[in-house]
Image: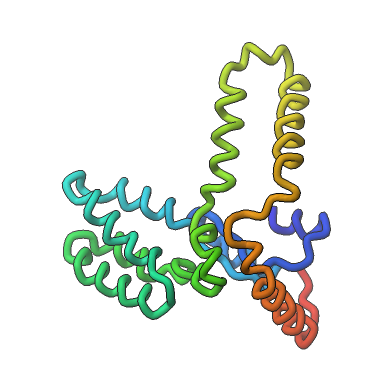
Length: 196
């Protein structure tokens, strides 16, 4: 999939956000060696809820929120340490997996005004849920081509609705994001080209 993005012309990427698929960071870095990768924190919370006792779920999720609601790297690391100390005795394997995740707080490398948009894949998942709702009743589509035409019309409507809209905080962050892209391009030009 990532090689397909490159083949279709996507040259530079600052950040990928994905669920917790193992090997995703390595796959990204093989194609985009300078891109950063953020694990979706909503998926981590769902994982925690799936493995924690019912009596602990609300409290452990609230404690985890302190990590991603931090405004800087230092406070996020402190919150992670507090989280680890509190919950390791009860959930050693789960906490080890969270603490060892190097993609946990990557979103803090970006401007503060867009950080809340970067720690989750909820934007795309909301759109996917909308598509599932529309296509749930299979009988409304007499064949595969009609379903395909319907989906294309949904995608076109979505794209026409948002081309001039800037997601919350991104307009303010634009100069910093451009600077980040320029730094990334400078790194790419100073290192020998990698073959994929």
